[in-house]
Length: 353
Image 1: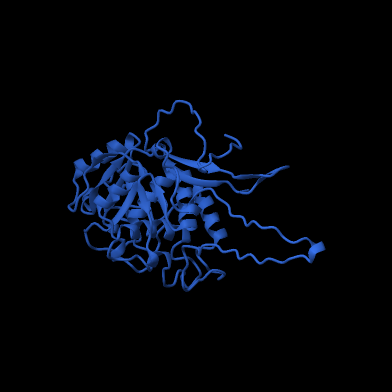
Image 2: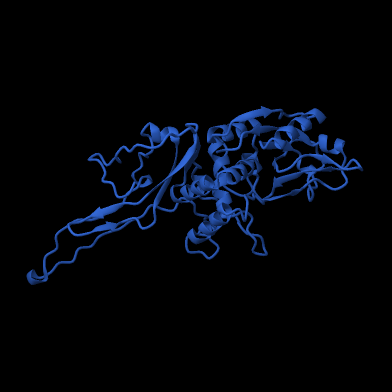
């Protein structure tokens, strides 16, 4: 629709659409510009389109709006009549305020050259993710579960991923399908050092908002308010499954648990991966290169990007996503028993449409 007037209640008019055969959980992104009509001209007052994410069900049921005024398409203006110069003129002072930016690090406040939530920096990171040049990377934070979720979302719906990140930056919260991400005060104002001594970030601002924000939204007692919050970052498989399902993913199969899976469990997941499903598995990170973990307990979430294979020497390979990259992360020259001892099954989902 183009330049259609609002109803008296500020609601948009109803318009017919073509037949839509998608599930009601399908995520759509609304894009809207506002215009102000004067006697002689029509002016666009939102040169950058307003965007917001809603499900098809929310659109169909008239729920595609927010009770918070600034989270809807809007602009603000002041009205008044000034005295003309012939009558001495008049000066009026107008105070303009903007809401405080939701995410601020005490050690790197707004204006600091190392501010991890600087608007231009965040936009650049989001653009790189949207175009697939980069992927979620928790680096020094204990948020591998959220990283697995957002990696799948970015691969399936990069537009929804980008919109969620932008809404978190603007409003400090977002909603992906039925999944509400609304981190607390501590997570939105984290403390600590965000950079290594050589200047590399310990976590990107976009990843803190999305990954730590998602994990903190689930914590009612513990707050994820610093990079060294390991307890607050542990994700159980029930919680991870719930994130996917609330966002619109359909769970197809699960053999995840606290005990090691067997060879049949690997075969089952290989079968689903071969058919194009999302396979998210629980492992001990000692399975991966560069890890020095000697235990055999579940400590890490990864996403399969290939099948578990075994070469002529019996050594295992698996292309998977972890730590921001997709590669064969399995330690070299490790056999099937080494793999099984550090593998705890997984959850299979339909890709998100």
